[in-house]
Length: 128
Image 1 (cartoon, helix red, strand yellow):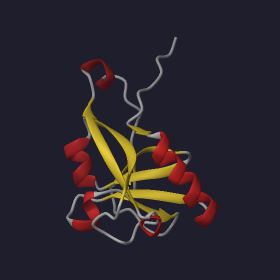
Image 2 (cartoon, one colour; image 1 turned 180 degrees about the vertical axis):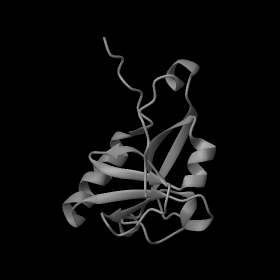
Image 3 (tube, helix red, strand yellow; image 1 turned 135 degrees about the vertical axis):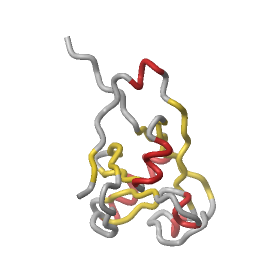
Image 4 (tube, helix red, strand yellow; image 1 turned 120 degrees about the horizontal axis):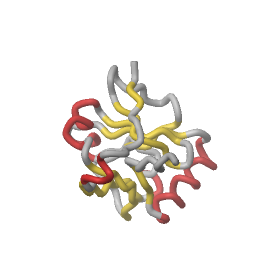
């Protein structure tokens, strides 16, 4: 009997509603969270192909089939944490993400995996 793999990523219902709205307007999407300042402190949503992950960045999961990438250095720091994508009212630090014109900002909540979860995490895909 195979044990179900533990997801590294989840999404709140409110954030999922915004993802659906953005998908209807823009088509396929992708998310990227950098490790830097300003826009990089929060996940950014782009049309698929609107941003190209750097070599060895990590794709930690999908939100309704839309890839969620994080910076390779940020992944090294947060690899033992579960990411939950959420949405807030108001403008974030940047204006490049697709939810900005809606007056909203994506945000990630983190929690550490338990020792049991760490033993059975979903694999990470790396960009080449």
